[in-house]
Image (cartoon, rainbow, N blue to C red; front, side):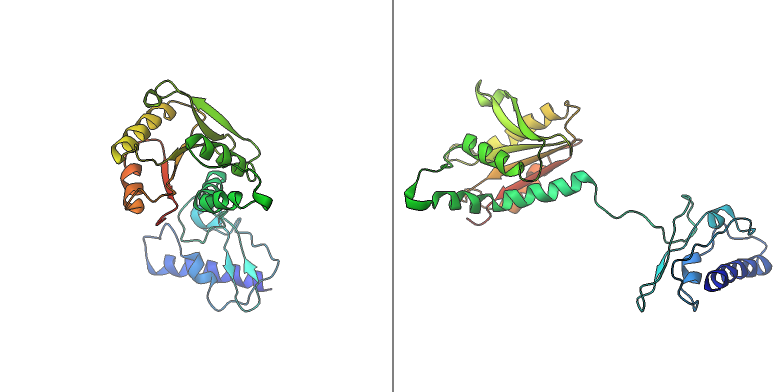
Length: 249
């Protein structure tokens, strides 16, 4: 059948290498052979056992999608580089998924803040006046996507004795450090604060990544993209993501 024809084609291809070259190649481009004029295979499993093929090929399966009818020859390798298309899981790691959601919340945070002020009959709402207000609302938004998100407090030296509330997502190993720009917060202050935060969280085993959300509703940071890159360069070990939003306020 089609599966056996594919197998025989691969074996013949390898034997041709052996007959024409004393130095047998350590690997054969199975992916190229499999994609040759071989009928598409649907629901078939191809075994390379006991074929005389080298280990780098005999323990491999081939994956090829046929765009015409969606049929697929699929499998995975044993780790050797045999020029085979591997069937690897392409789903992102939980940390990557979490980071994408966190970034979305940061970028839309200002929209949420403004919407909260537009209440029926001018009822009282949460006014974002300082960093603590940003931290409270941000944690509430995180809980929409991360049920295990919780407040994580510590007292950095730059806080003049006041505790700082950050958000910890334990399932992803991410700490979100929230800051709000003000007339008294200079770029040099941001660099000092983030350096201090990095030093602290690098020593915490539960923190695998630090995300710093700098809420800038008045647009005090003139070039947010450049500032993000400058601040991210402060980290030598712990992964650091800087998100300044809104941009161009």
